[in-house]
Length: 431
Image: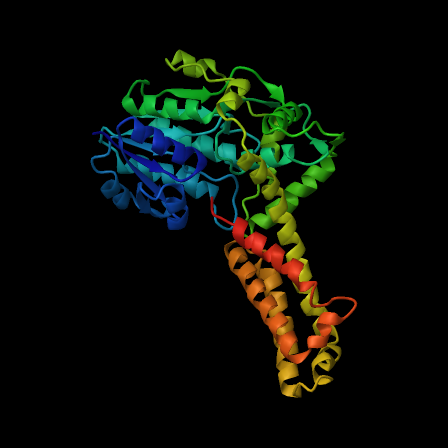
């Protein structure tokens, strides 16, 4: 049985490649840095948990001994707290080529349509450099460059597309001149399997894409119809300045660990258009890729798809509400701590307990409000908010039960915040 290793095996494309290669009778091993994400993707698959950019040449030699094909589906959209484009797209590819030098192992590189040395974004430029390293140093590689990949799963840009299409009542219009082409994930995996089997000549560089193009607003409208939502009551054109501002905010959030599909790289790619030449793959002997309409017919939208699209919108709103709410709550207390302490001391609570409760609670509020913005801590912070809120409610029942009957409802209003924290805790996941 031939053996395949998939780098980035739990990503949208990588996980699909692992399943397709297994169905084609390959023994498949996936590589990725997150054990939790790997188990969520496929708990029964064979996994090697490693951060790909840190794997040395000697380790790669050991890992790839006896392997017939390596599928490199690893990648990142933009530099950030967890990602380094140079490391993952260039240095890791260079080490991979060096590790299998002299071996018959084939490399199937998942690149991107538009990967050129003079492209407008570092994503495409570093992808192009990695492709150039493969072509110059490996005599047994195939480079596949898909356009916008549509799949049963949604992640990053495709998740944002579904969420945008699911906006109630309105449909934003951005990049009306941008031309977009798509490709079905099944066509990508079919091409990977063909390349892995040797059906595609070494040195092939091919775009994987449908032949038709459409504007970005038309693509969003098509996805809205596919998801089963009613036609929007209003179409709103978003000024370019607002889009750029969103991109800069998303870039800042990238330093907090968030891989937002609204970062400037993604926006530039959409503005420039996502296009490829389908003839390159067909001339290499590949089967023509499906059109958008054929792709969507193979991916019937379900209730789960609609719920995901709306939840994708709700999650950042919930985090964006909780963070300032908790920070402001703590700051207001610190501005006038005596007033806060009087709520307890007027009810016969010892002053030392009041001081600890007020100052400790205020600092905890601010720390939790900041922690929920840091992506690796978000889920823990949401749980911390639940626990601290529960402590506040229990403490009020003991020390100040009369607050529950206050006309302004200060204690009752804690419950909606706890509900938002529960929602964040439930919706946060790696992939």
